[in-house]
Image (cartoon, rainbow, N blue to C red; front, side, top):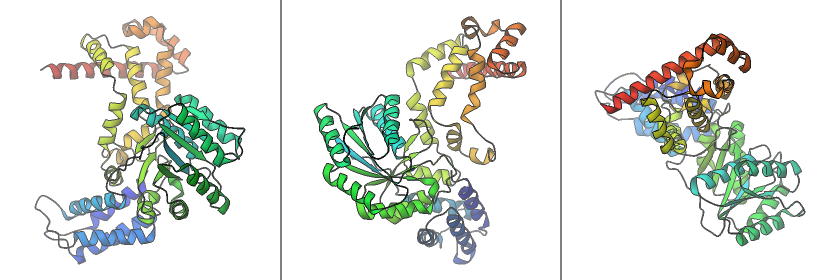
Length: 432
């Protein structure tokens, strides 16, 4: 996400030379290069021009402190302007109402149905809400089935209403049922089309008029770039939606949609989707996204994800076992599963400052843990609880059972031993 834009902006800042003061002369080439970088990232031309004009106006005449180079000052100004361009502050969902109604709109293939389930999961696990999903696409049976399956995964009620052919009537009946059974939030997943058309717009507008949602959200695929912005404008002109959801930001997204949508439709980006897992949904924080675009990582979001998976009781138990040198493969596997719940490895690495650059060109797959899981899975319960039991014959058996080689098994055991030693050292340092 944003890899090419980050590189181009970094090169732009290096162009800026001189000391003392930023002037129109020494900033001209930098600003020109920033604008080109934004346009290459598929940012709306008008937005790119307004952005660079604003950066230039803020920068000219700025005194450069002794400890700060002109390029570093430009990074700070650009960061603040990027955050402002994307909305400055995170915007919460409006969940007032009994139940609160959220209407989803967007084109077919934008990830709308998956987002509906992710949002339900988010509201259930993080906000403690009782959520009903409504499969209001009356044209594609596969869409209804997809939402039903996703609902089962997250243990959320799905109103399918397959006997109702009118989407307005289906939405109204679902909301009436949600009110009867005390649901806090109803998420209505509507039909999409391959392109914006009058029939689709009329249908969604009719649903909105009938159910009066607290939130109307527009879901868009971030990888469609400038097309995403144009589609957002068409939907907003008709529906006057409340916020934007950017999906598939873990893919090869150039960033144009994230940087342009807010200024074009003047509506906030509320969530971003960063993977296929139900947990891969983040509240959109403009300042944190600006950090990531400028290669500064996003440590705050990384810590928040870790805290969400943090089990205090389990942490105390593990701490005691480490102190007694009893940390075993079962404990290791448990820690591994907690890391996996935090999201895709590529996304997590991108949150660590400088890691994007360090791992450029390196494929980080979520399957990287599978050989380790297979090795531990091929051990007997006694072997998992007592690593010292693993002799040559046992290792050979484990290698065959896990579909790995003896070299891979030995490498993992060495890594496990090093990890255990490091954890013991950290524990000893804490006691001092």
